[in-house]
Length: 382
Image (cartoon, rainbow, N blue to C red; front, side, top):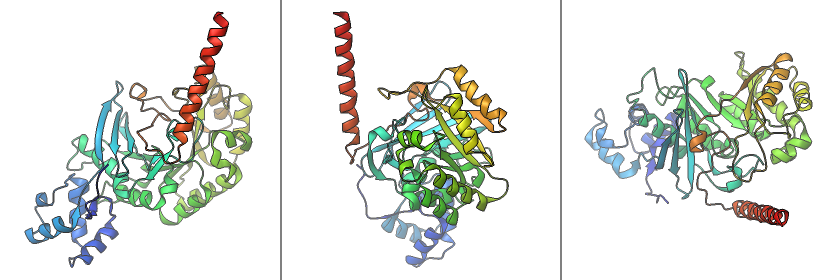
């Protein structure tokens, strides 16, 4: 576990927050812009390296502040170019960050929590339980670490990271303030200068927080749908029992209407064999999303041990996609990337110190199922 130094970590401060910090130590507000550039454009974590700042101020900063990202525990590179970092956060848990290259685009999938409290049935992250929210420094620190690893220092137009998606471990809207601060740094020209169209927050459907998000930021929005009706979604995405589909979609519609500029909602839909991949489900989805401007991203299930779900056949996936296409929807099928390093969608697990004890219960159930399967095999052989 990383011990607190008692100093202000400047890595997670937005420009207005940095300006307030400099005022609080008797300095001019413009110092915020200088320091932000050193941190995010040049990846600097040593105040002595900030050559356009006087020695007296550097000494003052060393006494009261620091620039500290999460500890990198490991980095893996897939055969397809996907990269995965495991980083340790202040709570002692480890979270995962994934970089996915595709053509001229490089997408970084960023985590917002250590574990996840929502327990979606098909997601391995949820089976780890929940430990803690990440600080804004721990969220933006994942971008900071990845950016430095590509050697894109100083920041260049042809950056390795062109898109950021808040689709890693955790539900971003349940760590609202820290996630919003980090996304503001991502979009700030003094930070990473990423377009608001290319920063995407993905939510399982925390409806009131979608409305709150629309009041403070205009990033792109993705909804993890995964089922076209409430009874099935109640099973797959338990938060649906609190915020059913009609409520969530209304909140999404309000959010998108604020954006204008022909922006649309992204619908994420994990296809599970014989669970939500049938023509009847496609028909229900078409009805659910009629007159709702959106693009649909189908995600074939990425298996993990004892999940109880299977990936549909390629024919089933194409059939589902074709039915949506014929109804006039823009539909893509997400290519599975990074599977050989467990970096595919739904496979992120990290090393979570679970406060909910959900992981213990899940492991116990897995063991019971494995024992029952062994007993059946033994009985069949006899």
